[in-house]
Amino acid sequence: MELKISQQNGLIAFDPGSTDLLLEQNPLEFHSEFHRICQQIYPQVRPELPQPGDLATALTSRGHGVEQSFLSSESVRALSAAFDDLVNESSESVNAKIDADAYLQEQIVAMISDTLRGGVGDQLEAYLECFFRIDHFELMRSRLAPNSGASFLWHRDFDPMAKLYVLIYLTDCNADSPATLFTNFEETRRCAQAGYAFPARSKRIADLASLFPSDDTSISPVRPALSAGDATVFAPSRILHRGDLPGAGVRDLLVLNILPSLNPWDRELAAFPFARLFAGRSTLWYDPYSRDKPSLAGHNEIAAPVWAELAYPFPLR
Ligand SMILES: O=C(O)CCC(=O)C(=O)O
Ligand SMILES: [Fe+2]
Image 1 (tube, rainbow, N blue to C red):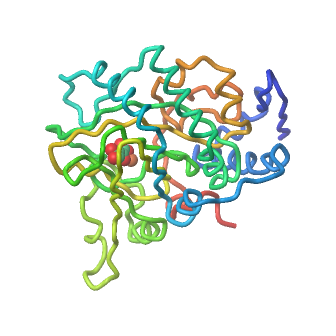
Image 2: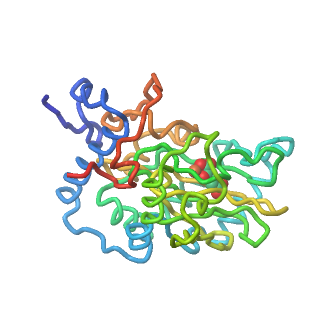
């Protein structure tokens, strides 16, 4: 099979048709293969690799980390005011989605671009060892709702192993406000070995200790406490996590879906209209190889390969 890469309007991509066979694999396989290719190209475009700081080191060792003051208090105030205007108070959902208008979309892209340029982008690249792209944003207000749902039981998102989620808090995270609990790679691997890797919604549990004999070393989930403007960054497909909705508070979140890329994030951002960044979609069933990153049809039931169950980013050699 001949893979052809070429450049069009400043963006590198594979030529249409040349990756059809790759796309016939399990998507966890073809996304991981794409990540490898991104890693091979990265040092050719950016010979001085960024130094891993606290965030990249936390991501590499545990799978989750905190970035304080991801957004300035000014930005947080502006976004919170917009959330208050746009939120649908009658939503019954735990994570009520908020639709950004064109003005808010532009503001969000500008704020996030400042932070990524200010050093956080380098940390994401240091962890991924390649360029990344923002697939899309999500805006949501989380609160106690009648149906808490499967996000609030231990799970891993069935997404490419390289995916990163950035949850930017626009509200303080107090003891009684919604938060997220995280395990680390090692704990996640132990659970996978005990048969709990990507549990179906109906099989998800609230307490991981029940997977092990009572004298086994216990699992110690971490619940980062954050101030408005801080963010948690984590690998949702590689570590077990769950939402934690203990009390009455609400949580306003701006979420970034980050994936490997052949091109610097800002170059891709400049090439496409912002509106497409605000349409939610699957970050598994899309074609990473082509320039436009189209969604793929045919979401078959698929199983995770063993290396992915064990939370590794690539097949084991
Ligand atoms: O709301 C959270 O803090 C986590 C949600 C989550 O893990 C999910 O929806 O997959
Ligand atoms: Fe999740």
